[in-house]
Length: 568
Ligand code: SAH
Image (cartoon, rainbow, N blue to C red; front, side, top):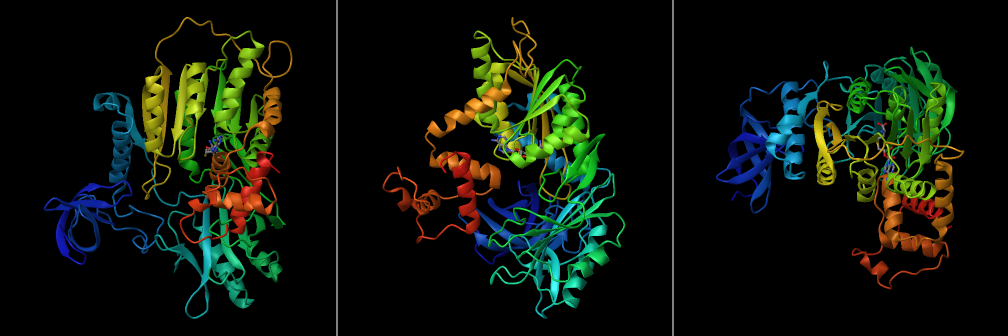
């Protein structure tokens, strides 16, 4: 065993899921950030556990053949890139290995099977400057000057740097203009600790095809002093299309406010993925790497192999990006997404592209599809609802089993699974493959070069053609059609009667806002609202630490969930 502060020389022989190098000293495993396979390094043990420890790289004694000079001077300090010192080829190999490893370990697929279906990871020709979106925090340096840059890994300390090589070149000038405006007009940066100061973040978006620029300032207040001076400078930049303000006075880690106000120009920029046009507002979700997104959706489309007669579901559809791509080749597409605003965007995007065969529904995929399936059987004398292709693109936690169950029942010929986390992907593939499906193709798409993340697209097909007659189903109003709206209405009417559990509230909040809330907090909000409490008497005692109160943001999220479930 090694102890804290021991200094050792070690060869890196493996890589962890977070991109850290792994080396062994007399059977003791060390995780060493910034060291890569093939390096021999001198490292100092920072934290020692029984069987493994974490060490800091002090010196590279012998560099790996895969080591490259990071392009960014802050690569080691900044939390954004984890593997910039690895050659791009090696990065792609690492990502493929990550997908393979999960399929093997979590999915239980054997190596021969994986080899037969795995295609090489789709990389970028130029793995820098690929991001169309950047969010820079503002702070104040020791001399009292405003600074902007990036958070150092795992902290909220700002490293002053207006030049990030993952972002577009235009970011730099925009940031310099904002910093200068702040200095000249004594506009203070927000300070997380005291909650004082005005400028919190800037969100910059750039349309790669249209060259349109959006600048959205997130401020701790509602008004920007001498805004005209800033606008004057910013509008001199070529492509400036939208300048907005998003007030955020909450004291939490969520960057954007809940709304935005247009200061100049319009409230959105336009961009294209392939030939589909999208309007993107400051609060819309939009894929950050447009070059790779086009490849990702192209691959999903290739795997779906549509002929124009198919009914396709796109579950977890966001603003309808994949749906609209597929709609051009399918007979009809149905998109399902939990965030109402995203569905508004999806409908609008369908409209501006004159796509009329895509319909969108707000709701949880694991509720909308099973409801539809049941309703169909009821209105069609027990007959099964079918779909030709089902596409899923869930968040990191993967698909709910209720959803997978319904997919299996509907027996689509193909399932295309787009995933941002190959671990939950492997888990879900295991289920589908135990229930009638077979993996045909797997391919990683490198949406985030220089980081450890990778997207994966999988094509599954139904194993055996069965004896079913494939009845073409039409949705909408009229005889023999499946009334999707009725399903939505029915869902509305039974919801209030349903017992709304804390689990449901937590799941809703996590899916919509991306954070967890404690049971005790939900109880507190319910109590504050004067709602009846049916909870177990010990429910509140679950909170181990001294009793804290939920942040205003969490209170809002809980209220929103209570409204959603019609408790209030
Ligand atoms: N396919 C889209 C978005 C994928 S991100 C695109 O490529 O742009 C995953 C999406 O799933 C998010 O928009 C998120 O809001 C949504 N989501 C999360 N949980 C969900 C659920 N249970 N049911 C439906 N959508 C969900």
